[in-house]
Each structure stands twice: as structure tokens, then as C-alpha cells.
Length: 342
Image (cartoon, rainbow, N blue to C red; front, side):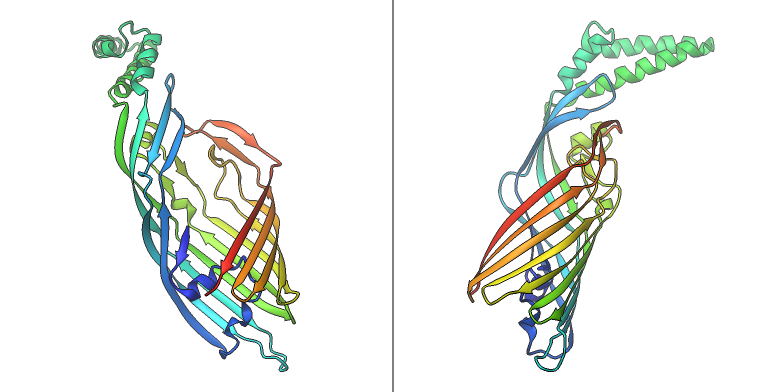
């Protein structure tokens, strides 16, 4: 959740509810304003259970709890420029509003607990690899294999060298996994990306306005890297390869003091493909509709819905293996907002 402590900044964020906003500054002459504020991010506890895929033969269940359940706020900067050109009745002037808004990165700090059964799985895998005593017998086995490797190198036996090197590396990984505690505590830092919004609104006829929004988000620099998971898998649990661009254009019409509505075309570039199995989509195109009902000056109800054609994507595991192909998918989103002004 991102909120702005500045009324001007909050207004610039409200592009999804464009109706009846251009006339809020009707008493102000053409003006260029600077709006600034405080961006805040609230985070709660997050739990994730899944499988950590690492080089065979170990596939280990992994569970992560981030945070302790208490609501914590971290802060960043929101600022930009707001250009106002209010219309004037009877003079042929068209109202215009444009805003350029920057939101800074916000870094949050999470106490993290990761649980696993790496040691148990490594022991089973060691026995399957021919070490009868399991992971406890790996040190002695490695000593014997290294002695054999020295002999093979002296004899320039390429086939034996390749086989012994692979076996030594495999058992070394298994022994390292066997030494990991079943429960690992650490701190995970997550930095939400910086973004830039360009919002534009202009009147086209009495009671009707056109609006547009273009947004850039620096997702290519975003990762979530719990210490144990990332150390073993050598990859973050979540990460993106590209920045995200999105845009929407639409029309809004105020029918009367009670009812107004809007319709918009939507586009999102996505943030790279292949994608994580946690979010197997690559952007979207779509349409959105909204209705705003204002029964009293102090009370309003906004309803909105979107139909999205999701971009095709391939899902990959942290080790790079493609495990799914997602095509021709759609989604429907709906929401309601109740506003009370005092």
C-alpha cells in the first residue's frame, strides 16, 4: 500500500477515478505547481511454502516466514510537477490537468525464518549415490575419492578424472546441505522499485473529459533474496529481467451530480520472460469501466471492473529449467471504493 501525505500528490495518484476532478481548481489561474509528499509502505507477515530446486538429486521442501505479523511502516519520497489550466464557462477555454510524479525506492527490513529438511534429503541422496553410511560417511568417502583422483591425474586417465571430479562435487554439495540447520533465522531486506507516473486530463466537451496515464517502474532492479534460499539456490526467490511500462487512455462523462462513468483501454509490457512460477504472465492488454455515484457531497461510491488478456509466458525454476507454458489466458478484476469527505 502506498499513500501520499500531500493532497496534491494524492490527487496525482488518482488517475483511475478521473471524473469531476478537473474543476477542483476552478478558482486558480493557469499555474505550474510542485507537489511533494511522503510515500509510505505497510508490510505484514508473509508465509510461503514450496520446493527449493537445486542441482540433482536433492529436491527439498522449503518454508519461509517473513515478518512477525505486526504492521510496520517504511518511508520514501513522492514529488513532481502539476500543471493546471482550468476552463472558464462561456469563454471557450478547455480545462487541462497534467502531473508528472516520481516515487522513490522504499526499503523494508523483515525478520525471516526459513525451515527446511535439507539434511534429511541429503542423507537419502547420499545413500542413493552409493555412500552406504549416508552423509555421515561422506568425509571418509571424499578422502578416498581424492586419492583415486590423484592417481588418475598421474596416469592422465581423462575418463576417470571426469567421473571422479563429478562424484566429488556431488558429494561435496550433499555434505554442505547436511550441515544446514533445519531452521534458519535472518533478516531480509526488500527494496520496492522507483517509479514515474505521467497523468493527463483535458476536457473535450461539457461534462466529458479525456484522460491518459503512462507509468514506468524499475522492476529490473527488484529482488527478494532470503539468505538461506538464495545461498543454496544461487538465485533470488523473486526477480525480474526488465523494467515495466504501462499505459491507459480513456474517456469520462458526468451525467449529472449523482452519476458519472468512465471507460479506458489498458496496456502493460510485463517485466520480462521467462518469468517466475509465482506469476506466470507477461503483461496484458485490456479494457476497464468505472461508475461513480455521489448521493451527497460528503459521500461517494466508486465501482470498477477490468477484463484483461494476459500476455503469454514461460515459467522457469530458479535453476533455469522451463516447467510451464501459459498461453491465451484472461482475467477479470473488480473493485469497490467508498469515500466519505469531511
